[in-house]
Image (cartoon, rainbow, N blue to C red; front, side, top):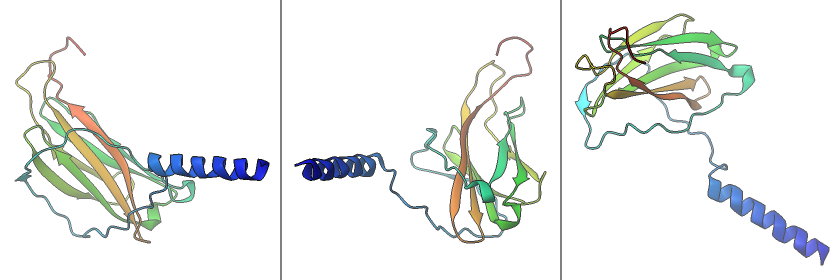
Length: 161
């Protein structure tokens, strides 16, 4: 009786994990190694952020997505880390408030920075948000989504947020 109850509990736990999506494996999507910048309009822009991946500590690297300035520029900087030599490609994709996108390839040397052209506001203290997603593809083909953030327009005005 105890063994059958134990088996039922194990099946329930496995079912809960499967429903939660914790059993999905990493995607091995291959990304182009060339630098590209494209602007296009998508049918339905998604400005809703999603979950990010946690890189294993032995290959961890970090990327910083800075705040959008009053000109609408969003700096993205590669900070390096233990796995810096294992980085194949760092792809940064920005979805603007109007649905257009910009995709750039960030260098893999510590301190490499790109500036994305985000949506500018109209001078108000709060403006439209842009979504920035950063994916890092390692030499083994595994891609980690390390950042998915919204950046809101900030005016030059000294008052407010």
